[in-house]
Image (tube, rainbow, N blue to C red; front, side, top):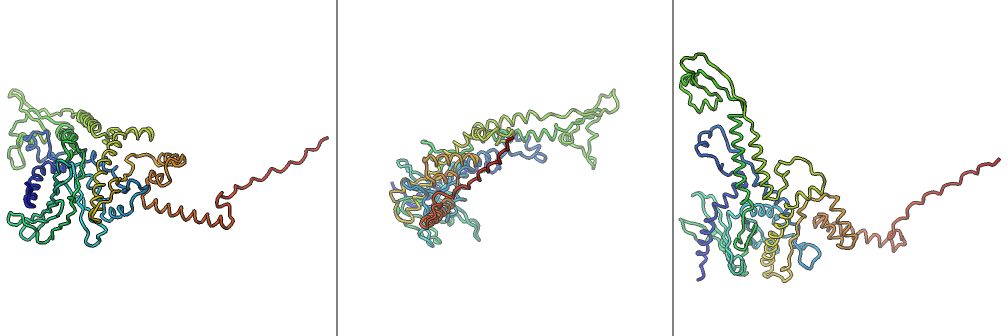
Length: 472
């Protein structure tokens, strides 16, 4: 039985609400706002005034180390040798350099983000693309085709009567805007519904680690969070130990409870004496006098070693070089050592490029659909161009690119792309090449053959014969 538009809206909102708590949890870990784990509530209550949680933001490090290697540089049709200028113009118009970066971060953290395509009333040749958080957007897939069959975007706005809930419903043939009035959803009179009848939902999920049974993805933080919790607990314990044990604790024998009073003569609790780093016990009645001393300070090395072990576990699970976590401070022996150290991270980033690249290709097909009303056949072979995920030195990249070019394995344009030049820089270089070739041609036609062969090298002067040596 087909759902009505209102039924679709309520269904998608219900599904979205079920996973919001999980999504907010992953977001808190990335932002370093997660609650302290593994510590007894009673201890937290007792130490609340003196100790704060120490947050080690390994989740952010794990995500950013991958995201920093995900830079889109263009889109190319399968039969073209270079990136398509018009698609790149639309990408740049929508500030997708910045938005795609944010979308990649959210996808890595919260399993997925979303790209929404819409028409542009001011410039029909340049559709609008926005990247949205999974905290605001939810999409449902068709179990047969795995394509999005409906999606919703939710947001709230302040008004004179408080917050007003809004929603946008995306269906294959229409986009409909809604507002919640007195607990009921009605079509928003401030927005005109868009009956585009394109046959496609103009929403594309950008999914991290999709699996056959989990097409909506898995957070990159899932294996890291338990270890991060343990590290935060150990670091917090280390600060507690630094507060109470790293500084020598004093003791007093021959002092009773009645001797500990505040400035107004009121007894001080045992906890206040502990915080004051003084242990006191009364002597036996037969003894007299007071004995004062101190215990040796505690060594915090056990905490250091535990944190080092946890860091090694994070590096192993995330494919990070141990130097990224600050536990291997020696400089790499060579550039080859750097590449070997980062091999797993580079491969992981390349896998992300493949998965995210497919999503961006589908986004650009939606752009063509909105602009032209159809998707050309050549767009089915659209390819996303990425910047190299590895970190080779400039000399190594140049040497490899020149060898491939001089060996006639790749053309000059591909060589320049391999060297990391942008499409604008490459176009400018090709214009300079054309001007130089035209200038050389004109010089040849004028009789200057040096334009083809180049100037002759200067002749070295011949050695003058030495004067003959007289004989006799």
